[in-house]
Image (cartoon, rainbow, N blue to C red; front, side, top):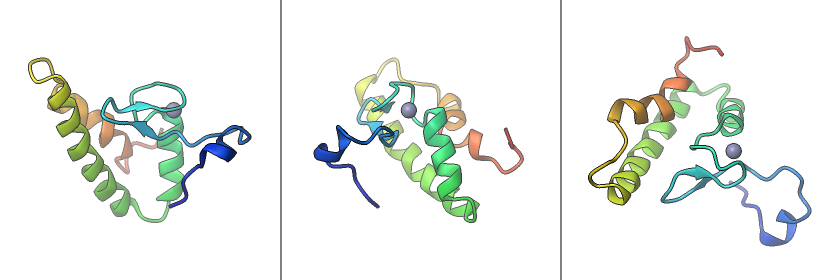
Length: 96
Ligand SMILES: [Zn+2]
């Protein structure tokens, strides 16, 4: 996986929409990650490996849940909301 270095970050117009941990907000648009651009990017990267995408998103959900519940032990996000945010959008029948 390639990472954007500080040097080309200033000159590259489209920076990758990666999560800012442990808040799990997009580093570029500040939307809850995965933001729409990140979802599009992931769909493209995993276009021929939907199982791989689900496995990846499960791992991300696991890490995000740990971070978010640690940050907000008494007011963390609903598990169903986290599932929808990290995994629900990638269901094969969801072709939006
Ligand atoms: Zn974004």
